[in-house]
Image (cartoon, rainbow, N blue to C red; front, side, top):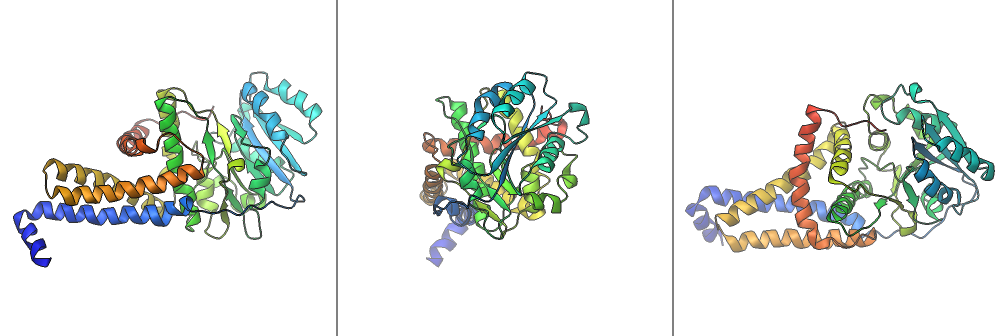
Length: 381
């Protein structure tokens, strides 16, 4: 075997080194899939419910969200839970939001309305109105979602709150997007699944680094202990992921991915809208803790290098069966683990497109990151 390797090396040392590097970075990729993403793929969550005496404040920030609130707010107010309130922060709305909230408050005594004029927004984005909503909350457990989100069931609140056992301060949930048959919808849902594999997997591995504001919860005392959003208030986004990046630890964070504990949002319907949303999300990544940027960057770097070396070696037809074996092993692992995660999150219809979507995002993400350097994405409306 050693003589064979030496012979192959002697034929073309440079390509042999490229092949060796390909094998090495494939091992790194497999470690991520099995040790990080596998913690979501093979996660078995206990079917438990919280005591009814733990009060929960559901917080929603809204600006000109009349139609979404009219459709979704009654479902938030109809949660099967004995002690909760829904705090809606009406942030400078110019539509009929005020009248809708006023009428609903007459019927639902657990609806709390907080009006924040737009000209009081000293913070960037929705961090100021969200802070006001948190300060106005009556309960210790805070559950966050957006105005355009609908809970998957009337057990959503109960499922999320059930995770607040002793020592738990943060619960990360999954915010899904509704399904349609368009290619853009499949891409958005793949990207959402991919992001969830990362933040849920790293949380399970003891290194939580972000959450999504569509579905997450934390304790009010934690918010005050971390001085709210002060450390990143100048950044227009990040009211969800940057706060979690700062406050979460391996011991104070749990995840909740059961089907009735999710929220569902309507995805963007045009590529331009999705690109703008993607740019806003990418903007906050540069403010993560160095260790988080390293582990996320290592996967992205080895992923790009994997495809570059594999394609180059196959084009040159250098040790093609070895290269194809390495590529096949990585693809098999990717499809197996990703498929199980998709099943856990009830995402279907794009498993065989995963490698193509991966290549597309691998190419477009650096372009969007560079675009963010030239001009900042638009603010939260």
